[in-house]
Image (tube, rainbow, N blue to C red; front, top):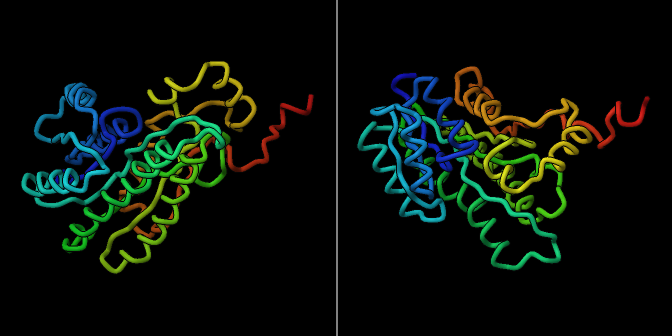
Length: 257
């Protein structure tokens, strides 16, 4: 993997940082893209991977930022083999209380941002004889709804159908496109939003495996989808949710003594 290059958005913390760390372990060179300069700097220092990581502070809503980061990557390393399209935001609001500004912000980052990065990098991959791999971050919320997340749910559902369309249109360029749909994963964002009582209830009542997921478990899925082991997989959304979407909300131990 020493010659391969991965471009990762949302790389400064949480899932994006874990995915970057996994690709570094796999031997990739990493362009770490994030809007938060301080978080990105702190994470870069922690990686201790000078020469194999470049950072770019930018916004996935800015096509100019994305293009500059792509050009920086190509100037340094000559190609982009994998895109881990991770950057996203969430907020908890009842449907009747959502204001248009909040709705637009979620759609702009989670859906239009995914489109912006994917299109610009796919255009580069289409020029490469080796093609490439694009992995978009969706969510189990893009498959089954969750109350108080109408805007987030809609954005992540859009990512899934965007992924399928991209996979069909880009197959002729030897570009595979898949999505990953995590369930409840402990991240800095989830820790900011959720109380421990809620997390305990969620695990005990909704997740068959009885626990939350961890960023490294999602990072492993990204690594697999980027690898040759997944060379015949495209247009797929891989769910990583501890079995949550496999049942109707009733767990065996909760109603049988």
